[in-house]
Image (cartoon, rainbow, N blue to C red; front, side, top):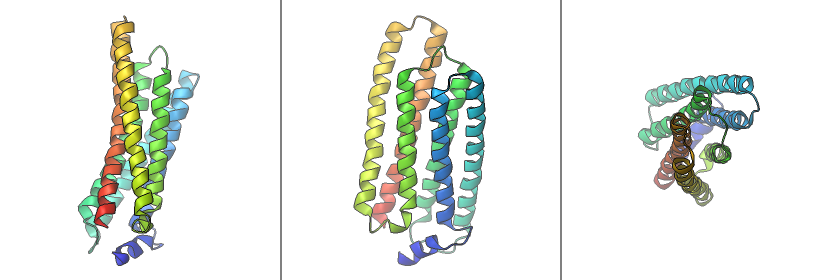
Length: 214
C-alpha cells in the first residue's frame, strides 16, 4: 500500500494523483461558475457562464480519458484499479451534471430563478469543495481515514438536505404553478439539480470504499 501512494506522490506530470487533482479542481471551478450563473442578473451573463462551464466539462472529459489511459498502462495498483476507474467516472458524471444544470436553465429560460435552486447550487458547490479536499488528501488516506469518512458523511447529509428541498419544492410547484409549460420547465430544472447532488454522493460512496480497502 505504501508503494502505491508513493507512486501517487511522484512529481511526474502524468501521475495519477496530479490528474485526479486537476479533475476535481476543474469540477470545483465549474461549480463556482454555476453559482455565479444562478445569481447572474442578465441573460448574456448566463450565456457566457454556460460557455465557460462547457469548457470545464470538455476539460473534465479529457482528464478522465487520461486517467483511464494511465490506469490501463499501470502495471501494478495496490488498490483495485476498478475502484480508481469508478472514482474518476463518478467525478466525470458530477461534472456532467453541473454542465447539464446550466444548460437546461439556459435552454428553458424560466421566468425567474427560484431561491431554492440557488440553495441547491450552493450545496453543489459545497459538495465540489469537499470532493476536492478528499482528493487532495488521497496520499494520506490511511492516516486520515476517520477525518475523510466524516467529510464523506457531510456529502450524504447534503444529499438528504437537498432531497427535502426537492420534495417541498415539488409539492408547492404542483399546487401553485398554473402555467403547464413553466411547470414542466421548473420540474426538469430542479430534477437536474437534485440528480447532481446524487452524483456527488456516488463519489463519496466510492471514496468510502477506497478508505475501507486501504
